[in-house]
Each structure stands twice: as C-alpha cells, then as structure tokens.
Image (cartoon, rainbow, N blue to C red):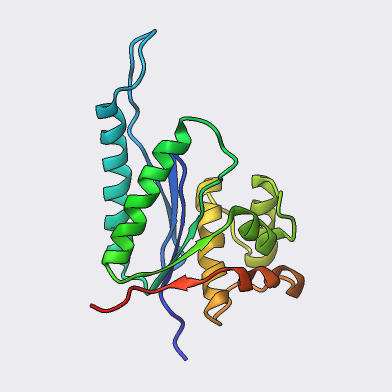
Length: 184
C-alpha cells in the first residue's frame, strides 16, 4: 500500500511551521508591523499579516497536494490578543484546505505532546528531543518540529507510521478524527 501524502501545520500568530508530504519543513513568518510608540496595530495591519500567512500557507499546502493535513488545534488556554489573530489565520487556512479537498485532522495540543513524548505538558525542548530520539530529526525551529509531529501523527492515524513512538503514546490517536469534505 502506498504511503499517503500528508502535511502538518503548527500555527502561531507570528510564525507558522509547515511539514510537507516529502518530510521537508519550512517556516512562514508574518511580516513585521512597525507601529509608532504609544500606538497600537490597526485592523489593516493585522489584515495584511493574516493575508500574508494565510495565502503563503495555503499556496504551499495546496501546491504540495497532500491527501490529508494534521493541524495543531488552538491553545484555548491562551488569553493574549495573539489568540484572536491566530484563530483568524487558522480558520482561513482550514477553509482553504477544505475547499481543496484536503482531509483535516485537528489535533489537540496536549494529544500531540502525549503522542510525541508521553507527557501532555511537554516543553518545546522535549518535543525536539523526542523528534531526535524517534526520527533522528532536528529542526531549525520549534514550529517546524511541531508541524513534523502533526504530520507524523496523521500518518500513524492512517496506518502508515513514519516514526515509531512507544505504544503507550499511541492511545491518543483514538481521540482525533480525520474530516473529509463531502461531495465535489
């Protein structure tokens, strides 16, 4: 059986990690917004940032033609203004994937950490250590590392594990559903 083409995405308000079906990763960085001292970002500033991250992410994902993508879910415990920007970016990317017929697996952050390390509260360093231990992989950024874990999670969910984590880590696979677009 042929291994399915799967991508992974780790979104943040400033940087988005993307793992492509061939196993390579990249980082998509929102353009810097310069505001004068004492002023806040405007809606237009935020919309330009969202537009850049969404269009660049969607372009790269759709160009890679994955059958499925693992997307790290929002960290609902975050309470910063970045949470709103992230939700706006995440919603547009999910919609772009849906429209392109790419199956979506939205992975709870704790489940992704449990899968990789066995610890739902694992640090970014522990995620990187687990990538090195189980896949022999190092990544230029923590966002790319998390995106790779999202990709590996979905490959395992589909019965094509690319990394072999302990069986005690794999129970979280049962908590994630792969959502497919209905009809054309």
